[in-house]
Image (cartoon, rainbow, N blue to C red; front, side, top):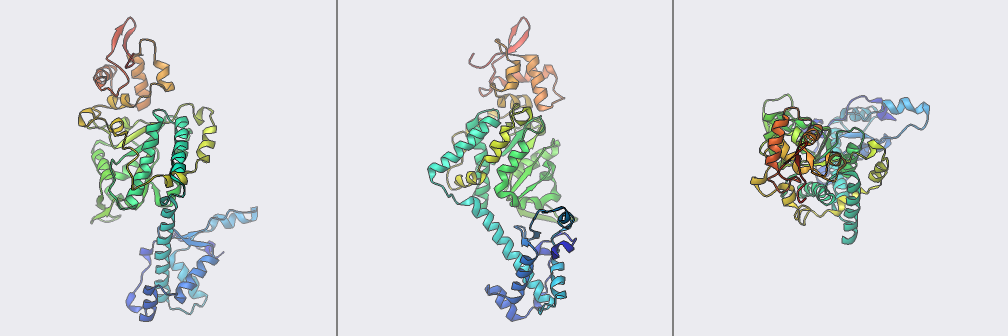
Length: 436
């Protein structure tokens, strides 16, 4: 396989140099008219013969064919897609009748056209519903059942948030304005529960148009190129520095991004095409400590009794889910899936925005979760036990127990917090459940 003889990394079409003046007018006419071109046909035959194809980014890629025997392992392990120039070299050495400049022009056209066609094929795969309205409703309902097993909190709201993630992606692809920019964040302190697997499966229909990045990359002016991707997956999100918080928020909601190119001080601007989703071992309040609120992030907690605790069936449920059908079920031209739950998610305007990480954490607490159940007593939740739970879930080492008590009392003024003003009992202060 000729492709295995090249160690060069694949290159973008932008790196294929072409002197247009040196290409004959007849060849140019054929290329621009879309007519079959002998040099183009020769390049396509070469790619097919060597198990190569053009990816959605315009790079030459090698078709992944696993080894079938021990004798094949070394060949498969060292096989690599050739650089664009290596393709030209191979054709010239094989006595191609075409000049180098003509081959370069034809290769550039193949990379450009095939990359565009592959992107179109990927988007077509998720854009058009292949089911009836009723089947789409059943697909979303099945997804809700999965989330009810997998995540703490309100399964209906969790479902709408993740459907809104898909809605945002499809709206941006459709060049339509996006209402309510929101980044879902799947949180669990435990490793191996399946949060990364779940996110990867969720974005799998768009995997070739997605990119994995660091949280800090979103704020880095040198990472402007990442915003050309359709989906940005931030796995194991790290805590943001205070000066990066407003930058990240702006880039999540902005239509354009300004920054610098790699190895350049020249300011560049590009369209912000990305929609964001992340995973973390810490709460959003700890990752993004912002007193003005974290309304651009929505935290969902993986159940403690999932795969890490022996419920291996969750892996089967995730892998059995038809995520492409889910993507097809979301209509980008209709109302946002969040339309009827906006108040529950974003609060009632600026007056109800989180004023502290304690407030943010308490608003997201699921009183039916195993973690809260461990601290609840008939009188409510003991203040000290609630503080320990807060520290455990947010990794906050700065807030003292006294500050927590004060901030928690303030948080109880918000009707969305599940606890009332504390009451003193013989064993200390308790926060009674709201409505009891």
